[in-house]
Length: 129
Ligand code: 5GP
Ligand code: ZN
Image (cartoon, rainbow, N blue to C red):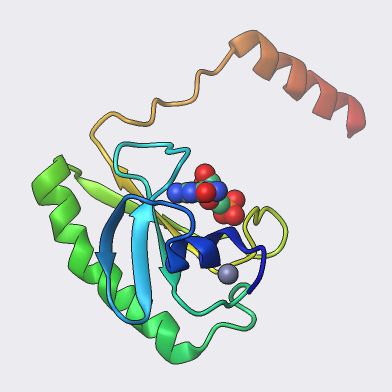
C-alpha cells in the first residue's frame, strides 16, 4: 500500500526498533511510547482495521502476543500487559495494529478527585432533576 507508514516500515523504507518478526507479523517499538516497552504488532500485509483483517492473521497476532508477554515480564519487569487497538475513529495509522502496553506497579495513579468539583457536579445534577 503506497503512502502507508507501516507498509514502509515492513519494507524497511522507514527504520524501526523491531523486537519480533516472522513472515507475516512484525512487532516494533512505538515512536511515541506511553510506557516503557510500548510497541505495536502489525500484520505485514496491509489491512486497514478489524473490519477487513483476515481471521487467521488475527489469531496469529494473538499467538505472537501470548509468546511475547512473558518476555515483557522477564526483560522489563512488567507485571501486566494492556492491549489496545483502535478502529476508524481514533485510529491515526490506517494499517491494522495492536498496541502492547507493558504495565508496571503503580504506573497509573488513582484519579485525583477534587471534592469541590464533585460537589458542583452533584449540584448541577440536582438542578436538572
Ligand atoms: P493509533 O492512534 O493509530 O492507534 O496509533 C498509531 C501509533 O503509531 C501511535 O502510537 C504512534 O506513536 C505510532 N507511530 C506513528 N508513526 C510511527 C512511525 O513512523 N514509527 C513508529 N515506530 N511508530 C509510529
Ligand atoms: Zn500498510
